[in-house]
Amino acid sequence: MEITKFLEGMIAVAITWVQQNYLSVVMALLVFFIGKWIAKLITKATRSILTKAKVDPILVDFLAGIVKTVLLVFVIIAALTQLGIATTSLVALIGAAGLAVGLALKDSLQNFASGVMLIMFKPFKAGDFIEAAGVTGVVEKIAIFSTIMRSGDNKEIIVPNGSIYGGTITNFSARPTRRVDMVFGIGYGDDIKKAKEVLSRILAEDERILEEPAPVVAVSALADSSVNFVVRPWVNSADYWNVYWDTHEKVKLTFDEEGISIPFPQMDVHLDKQS
Image 1 (tube, one colour):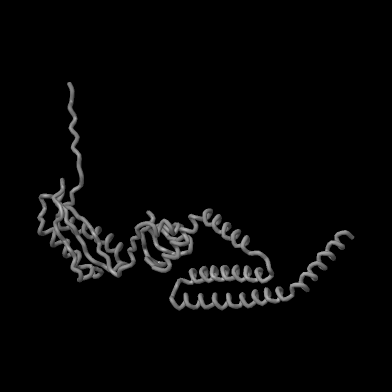
Image 2 (cartoon, one colour):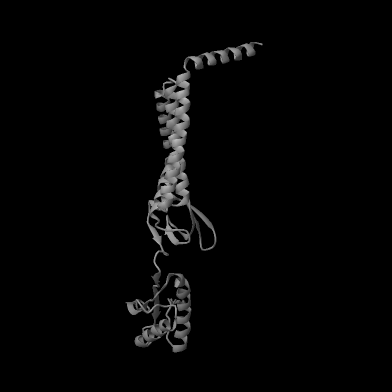
């Protein structure tokens, strides 16, 4: 019975308050519903503008959600003000809570900001082969807080965006062509001109190697046990590794056929025999 009387008393007080402040209640409801409608229009317009600007859909959804939330907070505060409720303390509380959350999520906010920059400026895209944050692999997905990559042996690597954007990014897929840098050594007793002709012929016979820029075959060093040639053909990026591997195999087989030696380090060990 006491609970029933208490509820009846609360309802009576509420009805009395509404009767005395019905204009404020009506204004608060109008502010809330009209403000909510305007917030919806602004959010829709923001989403449309970002979509037309070809911003990544992930970033569009995230920014639109932030805009909607911020506008709704302002609408609620404005509606409470119409009811005569002091919102200064509420605003201060929200600000303090925001600061506390910001400090607690400092690393996450850094990753978020870096993710926004990566999505906007696009130093790489899904499918690119990159090296970043000490990791090399194919980019599978760029999310708000992290980038998912696939290594050469098919492992999934999740890298925080802050680590990627704050360091050096090497995008091996950004350009349509790449130069293959190789070094081959021959013995000091071998014919340098013949070796150079053989290396040039091997490159000329490979249809994957581009004519422009012209490949380079030149003596690069007179090393301790070999005369080293640099071999630098240009290929389409997709052919890089196949050309690299095939050329090494072809050079070894052709050098063997032509009688050109490929020196390797040797060590002579002398043993003193004691009587």
